[in-house]
Structure formats: C-alpha cells, structure tokens
Length: 435
Image (cartoon, rainbow, N blue to C red; front, side, top):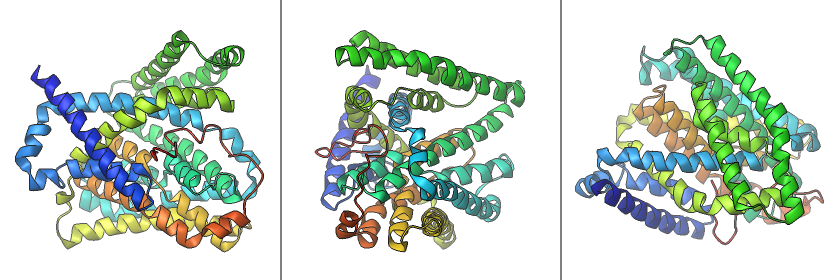
C-alpha cells in the first residue's frame, strides 16, 4: 500500500510541475513539450535532489522508481505507435529533389561527425566494457534523430504546414526518424547478441522475417480498421481494444527478438492505414491520456536519471559543448547546405536546417535505451540530455530570426499538409503539447 500511495503522489506532483512549467514555456513561444522536458530535469537530482534532498528522497525513493518507469514505458510504447501512425513514408517522393537530398545529408552528416567525435570522447567517457564500434554507432544514431512530432507542432503554431519549407521539413523528418530507428535497432541487436547464446544471424533473420510478415501480411489485415471506420464513421470499442492489443503484441515480439519494445509499436503505427480522417480519429482516442499524463512521467523518469552535477569541471563542460557543437553543425549545417545545393534559397534552406535540428522527446527515448543497455555512462547521458534540451529550445527563436512570418506567407504553397495526421500527436493548439 505505501508503494501505491507513493506512485499516486509522484504522478500528482509530476503532472502539476510539468503543466506549470509547460505553461510558462508557452508564454515565451516555446512548445509545451520543451517546458515538460525541463520540468523533468527540475524534479531530478540536478535541482530538487540538490536543493531539497530530503524532499526528493521522500517523493522518489529508489525502491519506487521501478513502478514509475514501468508506467512511463507504457506511455512511450503507445506514443511510438502514434508517431508511426503519423508518418507516411510515401510522402517523400512528392516533395522533390530538395527533400530527398536533405533527408540523406541530415542523417549522414551528423552521423559521420559524431563518429569522429567518438574517437575523442571514447577514451575519456567510456571504458573497455563498451566496444568502440558500438559507442560510435550509438553516438551517430543519437545525433542523427529529428523529433518529428515537436517539429510538426512548431510548424502548426507558425502556420507553416502548407508552405514549401513545411512540407519538405515534414518529409525529411519522417525519413530521419525511420532511418534513425533502423540504425538504433541494429546497434541494440549487436549489443544484446553479444550477451546471449543466440547467433546474431539468427536474431537478424528473425527480425527480417517479422518485418516481412508485418509489412506484407499484417498490413493487409489492418485495412479492416479503415473499412469499418468508413462504414460507420467510428471504430467500436472492441476494435479499438484489438488495435491496442496488436500494438502490445508487436512490441512484445520485437523485445523477444532482441531489439526493444518500442520498435514493435513504432512499426505497427507505420503500417497502419494512412487515410487522414481515420488517422485523426485514432489519434483523438489515444493521444489525450498518453500525452497529458503518461509522457510527463517519462520526462520525470528521464530527469531522475539525469544528474547535471556529474558534468564537473571545465574539462567535462568542454566535452558537453563539443557534443552540442557537433550536433548543431551536423544537423543544422548539413541540412542547410544540402537544401541550398538542391536549389532552395539560402534563407529558406537555413530555416529547414533549423527545423531538422529539433530533437525533443525522440532523443530522450534513444538516450534512455542507450543508458539501459549500458552503452553510455550516466555522465555522458546527462551531457546528451543537455544537448537535446539546447537543440530543441533553440529551434523556435532561430527559426523566427531566419524565417519571419512575411517570408513564410510568401512561400505558402497550395499542397496539403505533407503527412497524415500532423494536427495530431498532441498538436492541439489550445493545449500546445507535442513531443
């Protein structure tokens, strides 16, 4: 019973703090998710554990964190399903040469720069228990990710979804997320295979077989959800429960195969039907409880694992600054140059680079996986969290500087939003929440 009391108290405190800080960030024209990310840090050892250690120990005793983690992971599983649901890979081909080139460079440039940075960081922030190859691959994947939902939120707030810049940015972010998660899946398989009796080829074979079954088998069956929606204008509670069951089963399959629960839920969302009204309907049913309650728990749990106090002394802060510099140079700089070379005006290309530099919750998810499988240390984890906060926070003010409203109005296109359901994923303008 004390555990239940503690968990409910934790949820109440986390929701109150996240909503309060999120509202403050809205006033400075930042998406609520940025405030909620900061709120998670404030609740951890970086602030509350430092200035009020007794209060922190009472609210978040070590024995209770397993319950909080489990509940937050359920929220992330559902959220990754919603992210996959909102991504339509077919949209890339409609966005032209700029999107194709930029999406490739926005992954390759930060990945390569991060790999070179790893040569410097590995002997200083890692040890022999982690292979350099695994360390470098993970750093590359973590630097390459773009937060698709928070990017969509920023575009929605600025009425940019129907501009040329907005449609190209959404297409590139979708490709970046899919590619980044594929790279991360490979890394997780490599690491987990080294600690199990099963051959890595057996594991890879199982994953490929599972993906083929999902794409060419299960995907056809999922059309029944859309057919039911078209006939009735709604989906019954039984079908919604069945959809959620499929998400959980898919997540369990990828965990059993040696990747991670989140890959299965993301894949299930990616292969769902993409008709706009259907996607909007499903998002409406799932997103409120997920984004309002469960994701703040994940932010708080991440904050409890982040200890900025571990970044001690000038040398450690230099490492942190290098990580931020490489992240911004690779993502923002690489995307800007690629878009400019493909024919975009320089200012618009810089705006695209700024949007692609957004990391948000997707970065935190990847970092937590890296900490769980012990590929990064708590100190490096804290540095990478700081990088995620800085690159996400800087997006809105830098975008306003580079692409003012008059430029956006001038480049407004007549094409659609660029991806199904982008007004979802917690993108309700009255709430201002996105991840």
